[in-house]
Amino acid sequence: MPEAFTLEVHTPHRLFFSGKVRGAIVPLDDGEAGIVVNHSPFIAPLAVGILKIQDADGLWTEAFITSGILEVKTRKTVILVEAAEWPGEINEAAARASKNEAEETLKTRILKFETATAREKLKRAEMRLKVAGRGRPGTTEIAE
Image (cartoon, rainbow, N blue to C red; front, side):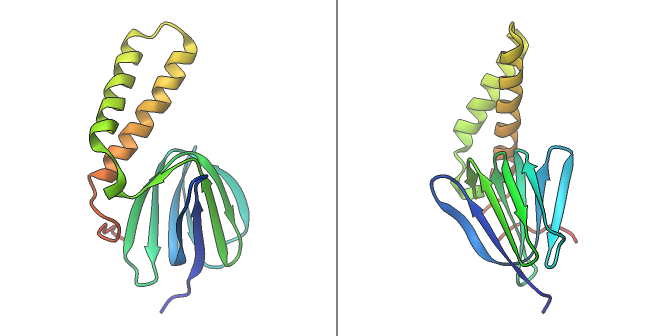
């Protein structure tokens, strides 16, 4: 069995995930970063997007995460985010409503800050809907 490392995902309200994993893929502002055991240590800001986790058996699971901070150590990776949701935890109706509201704001925007806020809201809603459409934790299969 390939080596594993500890992954922890924390929000202000709960320990979202803690366990041994073979790998993880995290969203960054300029793309994605893959993390494996014995990865070089680094710290980076995270973007709103999809967190992909490969468990010890090689199965992939996805979750929605907001922006935050990633700290990679040799045998442990810690993710601190504002919010994280498994597919089954996402309220699709609320995410669709948020998406529609953001799109409407972008059509009628007047002030620069409204545009930036609406774009962030739209991205967050789109990522939540993408994850929600993938099913329950542990059911996602990603081609290696």
